[in-house]
Image 1 (cartoon, rainbow, N blue to C red):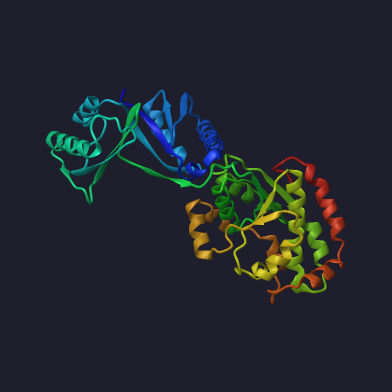
Image 2: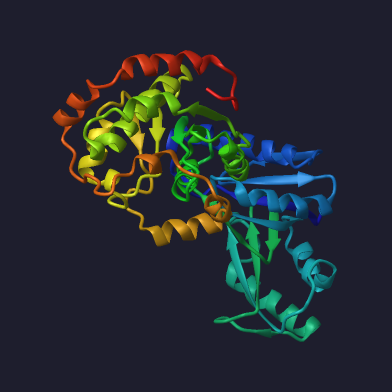
Length: 389
């Protein structure tokens, strides 16, 4: 037997009770999709009680497939293992020939053994002692229970035994798509790609909406969606809306300090229309509380009041240092820094208002033809994805 396999452990999915099979199946579908996108074939994904076992025709393929698991949400840990027969004597023989399966580039070790199969002929302590003696005698290594250079993991199940030496941390969270979809307002800055990533971690598939005034910067938006696509089940749907009609109207607002708040209310109205058209139940932004004047509690409240859908703000309590650290981790930071003039910067007043009043905003909106402008914009929403709206 002694065949290699990939093991994927569920983590949080194991707590889902009667709904667990649906979450696990979604994870299987996402892994299958990732493997196919990376041009892997002839593999099998087998669902076990608390983990997945992945086998392939070639052991060398498994090592390459391992890397694809790094960007799939819903995985707690994963590792490359040898699948052995559930036979005590064959287990001992395996360790007598350990150099056939494991490079010995270390001097100290210990065993980590657990038995799901309580009928196995020897208990964990006996196995640790006797297998340890084999390694010491045959390979001249030393046991170190507190700080070993290598750990030999053995997991004994009713039908097989797993042996491995390295465990990798997965991204955790829930499989993308298991929580539905959200429409994220992608600005091109540092924050919104990180917000998208955090929502993917909670099982949301992300569709992007970008408001632009410079066509030259659109490529940056598509590149950000491309960066995030491996985490997002390779979905990179981007809708673009030309903000010029909005700018023309908002420039007429008599109180300059309210223009940005009104612009953001317009964005939310447009986003709600598109989300409902696409049967998406939630909007999302990269807002961080009090990071700028339009992100105070009062400003967020006034902006949110025009939304017919819930607005998710996963970064609401994050500071800039945390956001930058995460952006670097997911490799969107440098791209986000590339030159691109954000729409909102054009309406940032010298003395921004931090506590806007709803009644004043609604009165000022009467000065512009925003229903007509929104109607013109929304008429274009039937255009295909990744095209100007």
